[in-house]
Amino acid sequence: MTGRPARVWLPVTALAALLAIGGPALAGCDDDSRPAADRPGPTTAGPATPSVTGTVSAPPVLVPGRPGEPATTRAAGQVRDAAQPRYNGLDVWYVRMMIPHHEQALEMAKLAPDRAADPRIRAVADRIRAAQGPEVGVLRAWLSTRDLPAEVAGHDHATMRGMQSAEAMRQLSDARGAAFDRLFVRMMTAHHEGAVVMSSDLLKVGADQTMQEFATGVAVEQSAEIGRMRALLAS
Image (tube, rainbow, N blue to C red; front, side, top):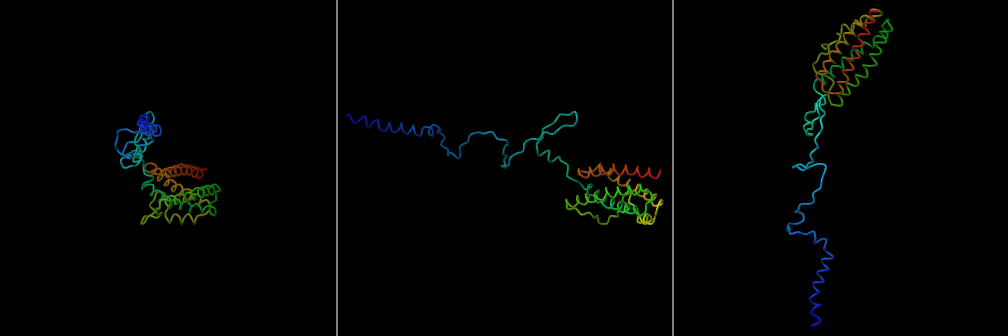
């Protein structure tokens, strides 16, 4: 009779040992019979919310208001869709027209060192060559980076504002001394005026920021150059 209690308490002792060893694991069990992979995991906070397609949605964008108006919050997609294109057809047209326009100004300026009588005329020509030569490079590079050709098939560049005719260019090349100075100022003034009009037009309709800055520089600098050349003839 003394051996029976030992047999009775043996299973109880084993169960107690099992609970002591596996208690933490067993404590996490509940009556959910689903496999662990199908059970919802713990909830954690994240910086972005996956969309239905599995992609992460972008956070909203704070859009500054106009002067005196509050800022507004808009979806990132709406802000991207509302953005202006990097350039438009009028930007391309301006660049293509301004290249031959600048090139003719350079052609006239190259005549001055050997033909002008007034050293101030030669100085004006030097400034034109120093400014517009690199600008032609900028314009050509702008087209090249966009894989756009510089030539416009069938376009007559002589019809552009300020462009001088072939006959006028021959007369300038043949002139010398004071006659050259007067003709140079007259032709270059008209040429600059055409560039100012072209640039001012682009500022109203262009989309490319680089060309907006370029056109602003052309309009300002060549307007000032017109004033200097007219002052030379009046003095």
